[in-house]
Amino acid sequence: MPKPGRTAPCTRSDARARLGAAQAYLDVARQVLGEPLRSEYLNVAAGLAVLAGIAASDAICGARLGRIHRGEDHLGAQDMLREATPDGDKLATQLGRLLSLKDAAHYGVQVVSSRNATDATKWTSRLVERAREETER
Image 1: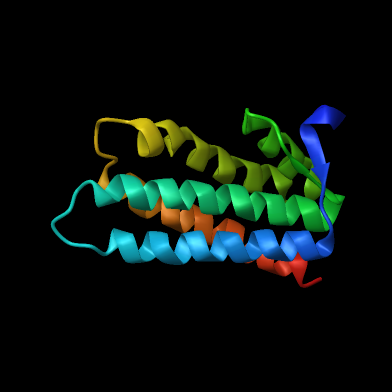
Image 2: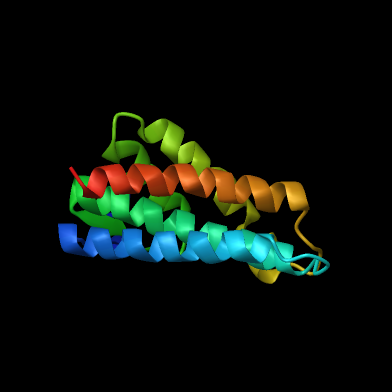
């Protein structure tokens, strides 16, 4: 469980706002992923998918727990997600897959593979859908 100082309160309204951000990041990631002949766009698409996944995780945790992770280490967000829902282990695994791409997508010199960028948008889509379910409960 994350340390209390590394979380922040999150209202249902805040959770819906994080869902909106997650959906926006995902929408743009999908658009960027479709850009032909620009391999560097794969990093951008993957990076946006990571941001969408983090925002979706916040929305889920905010809706279910009334708090979100606020530490520099996003692994704490995975721990919260595990705690938040009955299928939290599965959701945390999806978030973990996204987080494993974060450094390469945001800071890497090498281009993220097309497969990884595509997979990242799929993993994020699942998290965004669950976030929508949780914020609409």
